[in-house]
Image 1 (cartoon, chains in turn orange, red, blue, cyan):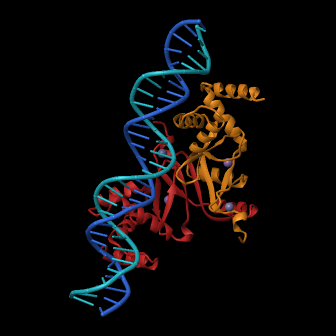
Image 2 (cartoon, rainbow over the protein chains, first blue to last red):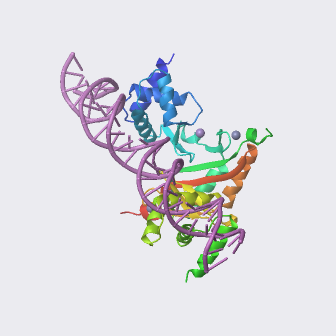
Image 3 (spheres, rainbow over the protein chains, first blue to last red):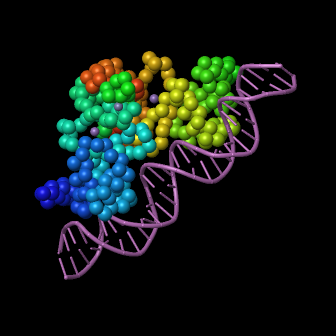
Length: 146
Length: 146
DNA sequence: ACGCAAGTGCAAATAAGTCTCATTTAAATT
DNA sequence: AATTTAAATGAGACTTATTTGCACTTGCGT
Ligand SMILES: [Mn+2]
Ligand SMILES: [Mn+2]
Ligand SMILES: [Zn+2]
Ligand SMILES: [Zn+2]
């Protein structure tokens, strides 16, 4: 059932000049299958749980290589460890609301905001490559009494 | 020449229920005197250079206490260490453009963008407390030939 | 199937930040 | 001005996330 998916991921890796190792395929498959924003340790433990053989070092090195090719996106929620998500297409960019109470992450996209960013860059003769737009606060669940 | 400034900073610290120690005063004075976005180690070294006696532990602890009182602002540029700047008034909030080539930081404020943030929060029934809006890219100086 | 550069695993090394505890100091009190 | 004491500091040990060196695999082009 995942043979096709495997082939497809091998393909993707090769297109990005990355050797299609079992570790990298497993990692991409994991991130493809979730909406979570995992950190390296969580990814490592998930892969172990799935009987995949990986080492922490490989998780870190793979994430670095994949991020460099924009196959995964690094997220820094400011809590001391990097998080990662599978990159979607350029068109599917999104930013984050992060609940300081329960850790829930809500994804959003606001075209107006993105446009304003470009406008600010232009005003400053600045060529943007990436940005972080993270709003921290309290989500609706945590706001309610109890 | 800094006697008045010292008194003023003592005042500020006490208003925030913080003991006005020489270390904290020196730290605030340092951040008041620069537009840089220092990390803890840089602050520590600057204070040493100025013949102030401080320890790293105190720099970290002071920054935490001062950030809690909103006298300084934590900045996370995603490079593995926290940076700090002196907080200005509520009205003087700003975000950052960060040059990936030379490290230069350009400050900006865009009311439209801030308004869009609030609008996104509202749509998601989310109560915001802080946000990070950092745009990474290449500044005008680094863009030029050579 | 062969060869080898790229990738991996393990353990040791870094690096930022935190913590413990003995000593000092700000500031409230006499 | 001297006394008191809770809060703050300094030194260094410790924690945690991430990186690195090196010997050993493995993907993949020929
Ligand atoms: Mn996301
Ligand atoms: Mn700033
Ligand atoms: Zn929540
Ligand atoms: Zn630059």
